[in-house]
Image (cartoon, rainbow, N blue to C red):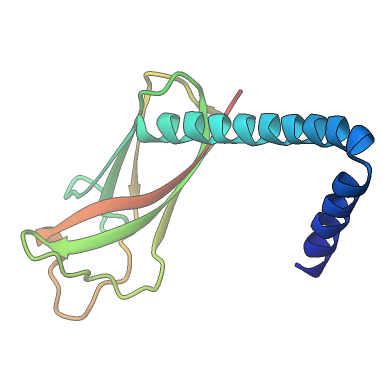
Length: 153
């Protein structure tokens, strides 16, 4: 923090003392800085849009093995191949909105060596997160939050 303040103060002193030389250099530096900031914001917006086009559905299923009863279906509706995805799992009684997982950050993950191509679906059975005592997992609504995706360029 101090280094930034000293650099800004030094730049201001140079700008006031030698405006003929410092002004063109300052404008060029600001142009480069705004170009970099703009490209970072654009890339972040693009990544957010691609992640929003992933459809992840979690539900309890009797068709899955008893030790992994959480049916997970991931549909990649983005334009790029999905390489990896992690998410946070929440479980709640339908209509109540009370979090019933007993873990601090129950997470799910997806990773395939070839990735998930655009328009394709991946399905798997995953273990349930630890739930509070006395909760019937068949009557819960499971949701995925905070998706973090890695796409192929």
